Amino acid sequence: MDNREYRMMLDQAIVWPRTNSRFIQQVKKKSPHQLSFLGGSITYGYDPNGLMEACYPKLVTDGCRKYLADACVVEHENWGLSGYNSDMGIATAAKELGRSRPSMVFVEFAVNNGFDKESADSFESLIRRILLEDPQVAVVIICTLLESGYTCEPYMAEIAQHYDLPLISVRAAIDYGREHGMLWSDYSWDTVHPTEEGHRLIADCILRLFEESASSDQAASVQALPPIPRDCCYGNSLERLMYYDNKTLPVHALGGCLPSLTHERFPNGWTYQPNKNGSLSLSLRCSKLFLVYEVSSQHLEYGKLSVSVNGIVAATVNGESLYGWHNPVCSRVIDGPDPQDYEIVLSMAEDSEAMGFVLLGVLVV
Image 1 (tube, rainbow, N blue to C red):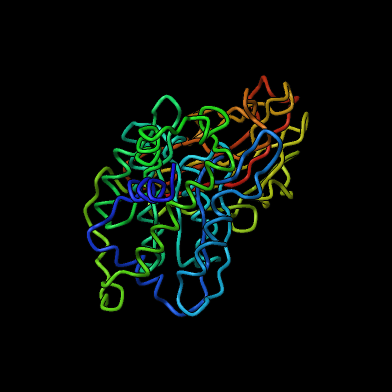
Image 2: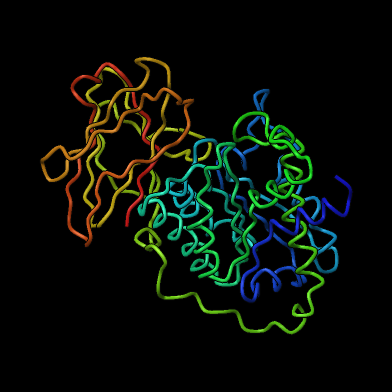
């Protein structure tokens, strides 16, 4: 593929919004930039031999400087992690956005999300949460795909248009590339994870967005940003979600349930020690409650946590997972339409008292 065809492939990937106002204003802004990347294993840079240093967040950060005003200082934070979907994206956003204050956020969940309404609601809630935290932040939605063709791009594209946000369609780029001799193996080393060339392709698509936005005639005249729509495409039930850990949540811990240093992404959780009858009690007024916890594939390392709500066992979450690697996941244990007062007790299930459990935090709406 020659340079002209490659540039055409990049152009195919950009789904332009109506005005692109937020992105253009950030590109033209003469101040330091903080880029934040939310996503799953692709954003994380997963590689069978370890983390890929030249993953697309690093390539975008290094490459975008020439398109920004007056050689702005550019830094980035990679909030991606293998297995993350938009529920974990909201958990991360709730924890990190206020601290980091990014000027641009890149969101990649098209292969880890489901295609049900709950997943679409979760994704739209995430987008709204980012925009409500700072209405001037530029959000870019990145839609990757599996070799089978699976992608959540259809509903994510609808959400992008509704909120006037640019979208990068890796599917469109690859479709164009295949017409010009490109193979799936040129992009990915398995059915989903990009090779170094694949990460370069994603980064180049995003950098093409920077290039076009920086040279746009609209750039100098854009003033007012479009308001955040009040109506939704699929839902916003999680947009006000809050994250709490052992530093911020008043609880009553008993026995072998101890505040402790936990996962690097969620370091202030609680550890249930085997055979110590640990429990954690809390009083909450909420409509929805998620538990964030570690999962492991090691048999008998982590057991099941029983969730008692107002004296009745309402849910059980399992810390053992076939594909777990001490990574954070979240489970919805209360899902009501309106806030209510709850007395909640989290204790090891009867068949798991000899095992441990690592609770990383709770998410509350």
